[in-house]
Image (cartoon, rainbow, N blue to C red):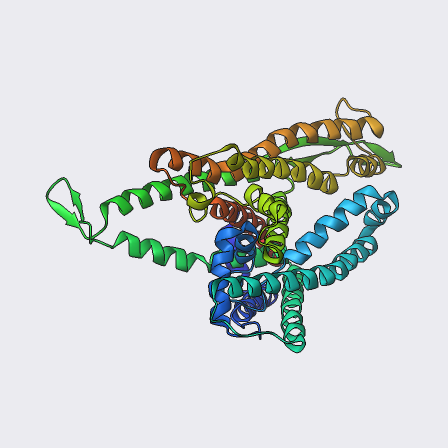
Length: 472
């Protein structure tokens, strides 16, 4: 990354306009995250949401990608999860139906049609999710607050669901506007802003814990006392070092790639010779980026939501209780209630399925990004070839074999990185009897690093374009 070029590009009016538009859209998004749903008393529902987050990983996931909009009982409660779910469904259908797969490869026109179908499918999913969320919250409030007498009317239901669906669609639209500005993937940028928006609250909590000297202060070699909590100081220091190491590894793995040399055949036309040059075809170790983690988290959160819904309708529903127990991420909030007798086999179900889904979605999404037959066909049309490999079918097989080998290591690496919070929890359970509760924080860190690098790469590319004349 050439940061000097990036800063110099800010002098360009078009580049500055794009940056300001993206920043403005993020500010609008953060403003919308604080507009409450027009239903009853927002404070009462916020308390119910806190209880729901402790019981269901789906609530935690919604709160993560909505930038705290879920805990605020905001119109952005469901966030962009309907769009993410619609994307998963459409891409699965596209790979299953050959005609749709051909359409997806039909240039910009085909991709626009599939994108339009994704948006259309996101609307009914947002409606269903909004109704389910409000219904669960309302029944949770009734169960925990006997003094609560508010009964929503049909108009209240219609108004609140409409507001939540509109909020989700506006958020999807803001993401597409960011994409159009060429400053990264808009949906990923929205998720990045959502996670970073919760950072000040986390830092404030850590600061309050650090400077709480009621149990004593930190003594340095017996001659200097620092006004900080000694236990909190060493925990935060160790956590900070671990985060720096993980970020370093994430950057290295995310930027790793296999470079394949491409040769162009030499052609003679009259007295002129063309071709005979070399180029490269970079194949990234993790081409799918953070998409598999987002897909796996969203997909794995649905069973817990269904279980919570079944228990809300019928508290004695054993199937719903089983779904909640199996597909709720172990955390510091729920560990004492879910595992009063310590770690059992149930504790490992969520991490194991999560790891498997991350690996599978990595393979699936990479197969969409890298169409080896199409790449081989384009190389052959351009008179290009890989040394020692025949053009056409053999080239496609060679690329497929290479990508599968990269995918094996990349998918396992991505899965292990996603498992780091659970491994940390397991270690803390052994040491202290309670997990640290960083499951979603680990996912958030992975999303932040990957999306930030991708956005920075696109900003750098555009900066090179707008400052090109200065380097002539």
